[in-house]
Image (cartoon, rainbow, N blue to C red):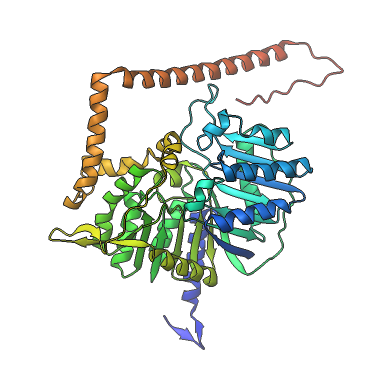
Length: 493
């Protein structure tokens, strides 16, 4: 690279412009300067900040939350929102049906509505709209008075108090994007748009960042994650709760490591969805062979979804490194381009590694193994493992396909070290097959219910269209009245 008078040559400036253009197009979001970002680690810091901001709210509170639990903290947060609604503050809450299905059917949100809050649910099962279990609203967003936003991986539940997670407080011009993201979800979840919310767009700091509000099939964050894996020159450190990277992403990490980049991945050992950890371990061997360092968290659960690269770039939000987050869900992340915050993230990552055990290739066959012995395994309480059963199973169903498909189709070499993980998967599948053979109704009944539900849904949609067509004909045949304007021919399907 040539230099003149200590200044970069024009080609350097061009490359920077191209990199910025590639990042903006991949993320689907521009880089916005003038923001203030405060990192909040774990539930104690995040929950206290949420409650404090809500207590000071004067005009409007927006909450978009995948999981809002009927437990100690969930009820405390609901009570804080009720109090504000009674005081005349406009409160809008959007929750995901699958994440809150128990609370949905037990009337957990009714007290909020009775206090004056507006509440909507994302994609509940409906004959008119079909059974839509995929494509969840997995975002975690709180906006107070159009002035302060909270973004991260934490849900409104007491179970997070023992988990390791990361969130942030945001102020500045990006608040406008945060409100726009909420308004889009709000409109898609019900009839009527969100009333106008005044946002504080003034500069509050010097942080430049992108607010990435992904929707199903856009793959904005997947493209950005792949681009960052290609751009990283020295370090790429990742923390993920439910790691099931696609073959394309795994290859990007392998190529970065082979090129000399310090690639590290921190994942849970104990998880609220136990079998996910088993499937994730089938991905270790090719990563370790390429030089990627893999660590398993020794504590109860690590739920953070973060990345930091080259002490300059960091990402915090709700997106996991798997297909359902990248392609099926509505997610919300902040991609930060700030050296001070990136170094804070690196410091925290190294601190987390002090509470993790590295997985290395060991033995004659170079199998993944613990680098050092660790203490007795800390398990999640039985209630925390069971409470997410149905919701988690549906949310994670796509993640097992890549590992199993790789073994069946032969699109990825399977090593001896993965025998235990694949044996567990195989025995589970064979057990299910045996149950279906012995009790065919176990397969027939769910299929019949699903087909019946879909049939009734399509029938209702057809009936609705026929009714609208008939009404249009009736309006067209009716004689026009001089004191009445002609009917609107714009009939929405």
